[in-house]
Structures are given as C-alpha cells and as structure tokens.
Length: 474
Image (cartoon, rainbow, N blue to C red; front, side):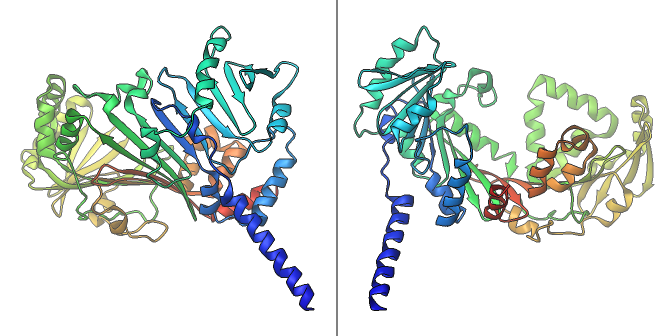
C-alpha cells in the first residue's frame, strides 16, 4: 500500500509538472524578431486566454483532440506560445509564430503548388503574396509581397530572424497592459483612407498612439482602447473637447422601458457647443434656418447636463423612443404657439396638448415635444412622456448609476431585441449560423471614462467556457 501511494504521488507530481510546463514553461522565441522601428505591434497570448477562460488541462486535451479531427489544419505550430504581428517601417504586415515541430510544419504547408526551399540558413516558401521563412523554432510571414520583390525581401527577413535581444519601444509599452490580445500603434500607421477620421488641425498622427487590449471575462468579451499622445496640438484639442462633453451627473439615469433595445446617456454644455457650431459658416447657416421654425438654437443653448436616449424597439411601424435633456431654462418655449404656422411650411402639424407639451404630426407619424421637470423631451408616446423614467437598471439588474455615472458616455444595446427587429431578421437572422451566434449573446455595452479610455463589452447569456465546451462537442 505504501509503495502504491509513493507511485501515485510521483505520478501526481509528474502530471502537475507537465501541466505547469504546458501552460507556463515554454520560452518566448518570437519577440526578438520584431524590428526596433516597427510602426505597430500586436501580441496574442493563448496562455492568457486559457487562464482567463479558466480552462482545465482536460479541457485543453479535448480541444486538441478536436483539432486532430480537422484535416485542413496546419501542423507544428505552438499555439500556447505568444504570437506577434507588426507593421514594418516600410508598411509590410508581418506575423511571427512559434513552432513546436518544424518538420511537421513544413510537411503541412507543402503541396503541389507550394514548394519549400532552403536558403541563407532558413526554409522558405511563397504563395498568394505571402513570403514566409522558418527555422526549428519560429516562422516569419510577410505580406503583401509580389513575386518580383520576394527575393529582395529575404535579406531583411533574415536580419530580423537573426536578431538578438533588443528594445522595441512600441512592444514594451503594449506589454505594460494585460490582455489576451494587445495592440499598440501610432495613428500614422493607419491607412491614409482612414486617417481623416482622426486628423484635425496640425496634429502629427505619428505622435498619437492607440493602445488596445482584448480580455475575456466570465460572461463577457471586453475590448479596451486608450489614446496617448506626445503632440501638443492633439492634447490641446482633447482638453478643449472637455468643454463640450462632461462627466455624466446621474440626474437622468432612468428609462421608461423595462428592457430597451438601446439606452444611451452623455452630458453636454449646449451653449458652448452652439457657440462652436456658430463659428462654422455651414453649420451656422443650418442652425439659423432651423431656428426660424421652432427655436432650435435656443433649445440647444438651454441644454446643460445629462442627455439620455431610450429606444424600446424598431419595427415596421413607428419606433418607440424617449429622449430627454436637462435644461437650465425653458426660454425656447416662448412663442411655441406660433410653431404650428411656421412648421406647416415643412408639412408638419403642431398642436398644443397641455402647458408646455406639444404634438407634432407628419405623414401619419406622431411625436411629442415639451418640457417636464427641468427636462426637454422628445417622445413617440405622450403617456411615456408624462410618466417619465421608471426603471433605473437594465436587464442584468446592474444599476444605471453604477454603470454610467462619472463616465463621458454610456450606451447599452440589447442583442435579443436587435435579433428580433424586422430589418435584421429579414437580412441576417434567417441564416442559421447567425441565429446561433446571436442566441449566445446578451448585450453590447460601450462606455468612455473621463480619461478618454473607451471600453466595448459584449456580454453573453452563459459562461463563455460553457459555450466553448458545448461547441467543442458538436
């Protein structure tokens, strides 16, 4: 019996040691391939994914068995070692993968159309604008590389593959964060087509850096982004934006709908925004034209605080919505009795319901506008407008105050209701695969804090580990 216990103890230690090595013991053989002057870097850490999803050793073995049934897989890749991507200084997209079995990798990528050759101490292959080289420990891929330039790129790739330990500023900064996927890039590395989204004034996009971290929670996928800058002009613009978009105070954190399709809230100083828009000739003209009909400019200037948007559903008929904005005065309601005559030129009928509450009708669509309890409102239903907000939490029970107060922006989208909307149902949900994916999802939440850190969170109805296990068995 004693001998059996000793053997059992040795076996347990061996398994535990093997598991530790399997998850934590392998070195990082790919990091040094990244050049010092990379414009962008990305890290994928499968070990971190395993830890965050709370995979057990038996779960990993089951997953590997599932991969074993896949005839099209690429063999020989060490999927638990960190993998890297980067954009080179001359704008090539590159990836670095650790290899567990270089011979198996070579065999799996070789075909009648793809041949592997030996040159400069490495194995090489070229296919579909992708040039790759590998040794016994790692593989480097570069794209897009035309056939004509593939020979010229080999010297650069050999240099990268042979690099020893060195400092990569972008990578060091990225690794200061925690995540399954980490990305750091200067906005100057973004394709020119999209740079206009970020460009303003004399901002040097090469001095503005985007950090992205992807993490897996128990019942949520979470993407966090943060912009950092060494550019004074950019920092000046960010500081100025704080005059327009302020932290949510929490005065309007209620919704009239128990489970709305969309709920969003932010805080603004309407007068400051109006003055800024008035400095632009085009927007100033639009504001002047709108002001003629129903004091729109005065409405905007009166807003001083939280603005909330609740949409209950989007259907083939009129949508159900309720928009409120905290106002510092209701001067814009003066002369409201004349709105009917002015809006009539636009085909809109305006009738007073009671006090500062009006009904707007156009083409069989009826909406309501008015002021209640220091709030300007727009609503699709007058009873909703009269009763105001009833619910201070969304479907998951978390209070709106805890989720939104103090942030610059908060939005929550109900995936269930989105899937039931006629537009999406007719276009996408008819596909079985899309139906299945939507069936696992709960809400999409987006928020930004006062430090300009944005978080996009996709929540699930079940634990993510359970969803993966169910699909592994299919």
